Amino acid sequence: MRTLMIQGTTSDAGKSTVVAGLCRLLARRGVSVAPFKPQNMALNSAVTPQGGEIGRSTALQAAACGLAPHADMNPVLLKPETDRGAQVILDGRVHGHMDALDYHAFKRQARETVLAAWARLSSRHELIIAEGAGSPAEINLRANDIANMGFAEAVDCPVWLVADIDRGGVFAQLVGTLALLSESERARTTGLVINRFRGDLALLEPGLGWLADHTGKPVHGVLPHLSGLLLDAEDGLGLAESAAEAPGLRVVVPALPRISNHTDLDALRLHPRVALTLVGPGEAMPAADVILLPGSKATASDLAWLRRQGWEAAIYRHLRYGGRVLGICGGFQMLGEAIDDPDGLEGEAGSVPGLGLLAMRTRMVAGKRLRNVRGTLLDTSSGEGVAVSGYEIHNGISEGPALARPLLDLEGRPDGAVSEDGQVMGTYLHGLFDEAPAAAALLAKLGLEGEEESAVNLAAHRERQLDRLADALEACLDPAVLAALGAR
Image (cartoon, rainbow, N blue to C red; front, side, top):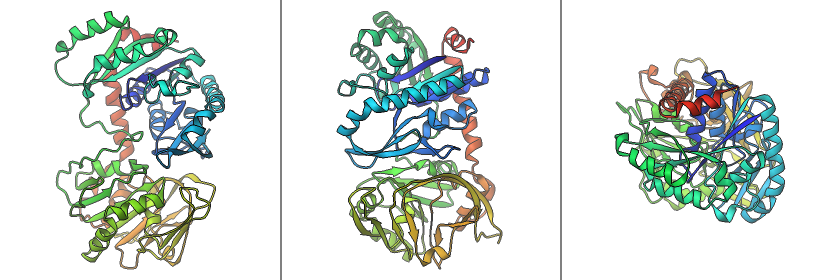
């Protein structure tokens, strides 16, 4: 039973990327390796074959290992609902809702869940590559820590510390983090990794020698900046436009405060004929062919934000001029006449009016629907259904006459709705653009004409990116260190 933990000097230092690359590299060398994230805070999640819910980046790391995702790989998942509260998921299932102080006290119990999951996973694999969260130097969160050094100390594993040179101050990041660790925590930090380096490595080498001498820790490698690398994000949402070669369809997406599963957009970012623009707070909506309302962890709250930002009027104007609107999951719920949350499952109890674009209303109910599904996209230009697959993660039941015109058939069950004029459509299915035939057919319904072969197979793209990442790690990490990881 062996475990290596990858921690970072900051959030988004590259921990998830390094873990994914190591997982693919070691799996290619024949090592039985699995990822593990003790505690994750993210709104991008995935459904396991057993119907559990884990962080999306951990599911990506499982794919890097050639494994199906499992709840044991991410036993604690926190999904923020407000600035102070989150839904707490243990072993893939909703445990409840807690504010930050309550969860801090709950970590003693969560620790038992984490260690039990790690023990089960370790019994099935030779090597576990664990990923920390945030930084181990967050002094205010050290008590009962299960995300970083608290876990590493509990299972007595070595730690690599990753820093992002692209942020600037990389030496201060590493030296400062080590200085804030306890003596035992510094001792188990066995090496340093610098991520996202651009330029001539010779210019950095004098600093690397100083760093190793000053800290007493070897620099295991310098990972270059990999331009264009697109892998399933843990949570961060970039607002940059996609780089379409010859835009045929302009898709605009509001960057909701509690946007969830925005990996739905990845295939659109890569499509050479789709210009995808994410619009942040205070920004005017640009010209668009399609407005896409994404998933949300706090649907009523995000709908109120849309209204404050002027999106409601913009959507009505967009439709008057012949534009189209697509809602996914929470975005689909917003399209109806009302959202009822009598028990306050996603915020304040009560009811709020929807955008009124589909004749339906949604009622939030306890018991999240979690499952991977396959089905058919209905009413396509060819007159035949096109196969589609994805996953459902949502609270809420939608009812109303609009559902008599479904967008999809999912294993014999209608899903979603299409307005009579075809301008407004919605679905609960995440990942509907991930497979090229389904993406091409749906984009045709949304107004993209011709060149259906341009659609991107996201799974194949993901595999190529994981191999590219593994190749980069193999080239830049100390061969002796990699050999030791692969030793049986």
